[in-house]
Length: 288
Image: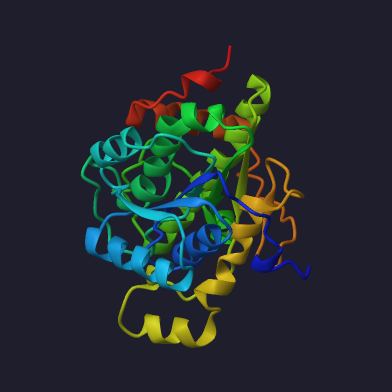
């Protein structure tokens, strides 16, 4: 497909949040949304890096409506504080993530990759849901990965205290992202909500998720630049051809999620557990 960011429609009058928009594919995602007229909130943990990203976007797109909001997805109190400050919302891009890190825990005691990549975004989406449902055509884009196909969820060991592995934990968090995106779409449809939920796979992109040391220069050499990795997110966020429940890959083809990701039973259980862990219930989409 020849679609590029130049194909994006005008977004004047809309408000978008991009998590992790200070770096990686989040920054070009935020830039292009702002360049096309959206009011963009750069949601990031570090105020200095967030402010730098806002300044960079303004230099690249003079007149852009862009601001910063502090958001630490590894801290549910921060998620609640951030969400409370949002007044309207049309588009939420759940982009931020951590990966391939040693085992550690979030402020709330969750294994960090699962807690940040999934639970933080689950809570954020639920807290912002009333604003999304008030929008005329809201979208939630969740950045997943084909790594989800290697993931599995042991509900008896969500802390991964037995047999932790960096890639194993990352794959689990990406499976959770997929399950969430697809279940959100199912619940929105059942509720008759004007909201669509889409998952994306950016492809192998050189981003901060690869950390430092030897891995980072190799990643930068062999993988695509973040600007190219952002294309699937931008397409999912803005193209009129996108349908809820799709999984859009780096060449904008519709990909087939793994069998586990398509399991409605697994998705329901993860949703219920996530609601219990975060205290965010998505009452507007509750199943009868």
